Amino acid sequence: MSDARSVFMRKRFCISLLLLVLVLALTGQHLQAQAIQPSFRCGPANSAVERTICSNTVLAQLDSELTPLYSYLVAHVTPDERKRLISEQREWLAVGRVKGCTDSGLAPCMVNNYSLRITALTTKRNSLGEDGGDESLGDGESTAIGGAEFGCKKDQVTLTFPDDDPSLNQAGRGVLNATYVDCRFSDGATIRVKSGYAFPPMPYGYCGLSPPLKLSVWLNHRKVVSEMVFTGQCEEPFAESLSFNEKGASYCLKTRPNGDADLPERFKATNELCGGWAFDQASPLDVVEFPPKGKKPAEVGSLTLEASGPMSTVCAGMLVLDSNGEPFVPDGLPTPAWVTQDVHASQPDTLSDDGSVRVATFDLTNTGRTSRVYSMDENKPFFDGTALGTGGNDVLAKPFNPENWDDAVAEGIYVFQFAHASVFFALGKTHMLLNPVNHLEDPTVIALRGQSVVTECTFHRTQENF
Image (cartoon, rainbow, N blue to C red; front, side, top):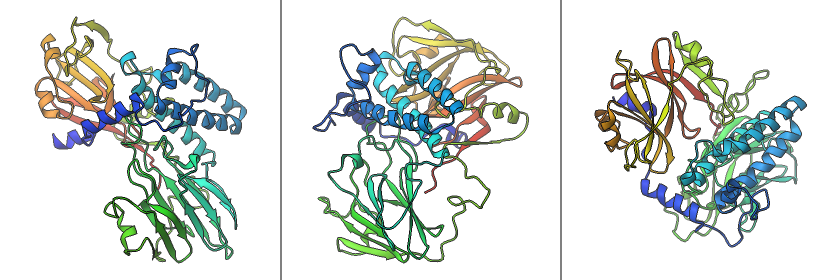
């Protein structure tokens, strides 16, 4: 079962950290002196959804980031694409941003939906070749890039990290994957610096579960700095400045109250606040970042299908992604006839923890026997994913541990932690499409065979090249 479990069981998160970060996000204890405003005016006449955004700093920040991103796309796509984009955005505002949300968990659910929408729109913007830093600068020119001020000179580039620039602060960390910029030297050499996050944030928390900022550098299409972490988690950058020329890198660190124990090894070369290192001039050409002429690089977030046999055709039909960039079960495939059953009382940590459960009758485990199947789909901090129970009504009263597949299955409950399962029928069997809660892992199509799991299709997601 260990190999099967790795298909859909995420690394264990610290539940206490999740709850703490969520409480901070929802109660506003992380607010700075100046409140973050959403893209619209807050007032008594706002809808319930807008009032939720106005009262939550995380949502206000995400809303303020999404609007200019959407406006940029509207101004830069073709007329036909503009019509589709406007229609899609209206649908998302009306339905998509509260998709799967309940009144009791509205704010954290919307944080997840906003983050996914921003990631999807960022992917669209990247495909235009306008990735917020997709430009080549000359001597004396500068721009902002991923938490830093980027300056280009005739023989070096410099990144500085001002403390008092609100456009470079860490609010809303992890939403945008990465930005990059190229600098042309006077001798014709080029340096590309990319800054940002290797993957989107986890769905919960203001910044505590977002990854630290990373930095990669290419000299003449050769990667000379790879995935260098230059901030702590939920912290400001370690460095006061970073500089790169054709020979190597230099830096000066900020004074850190906790000493240098948590600094990356790259910054521990000397005992001084300033130091540096030489580049490996024999680094190979990076054909992923700079593909050969005529070959278009894969879009970040795009999916490629790995499948064989009859299910290949079925899974290929799921590559038409939804507005969040996720595969989905197309209308042509039959799905269970779920109905909602009132169980009259909520029972914590069970399939009926809110007093009701969805139920349908079918052969979930492909053993030739149909049974009642109960479904719980949640995005709560202590359980984000889908649980499916089989058997009689007694299964509804059985507590289950979402992080322990074997123990849960022994109780007749199949738990997909940090992945949401969509059940469908094809080729005479029951299958499930598992969509992870963020874009870090790959969606899969699986089928149960008794208590074991068979992976039938994998949708490999193109990640940011760091």
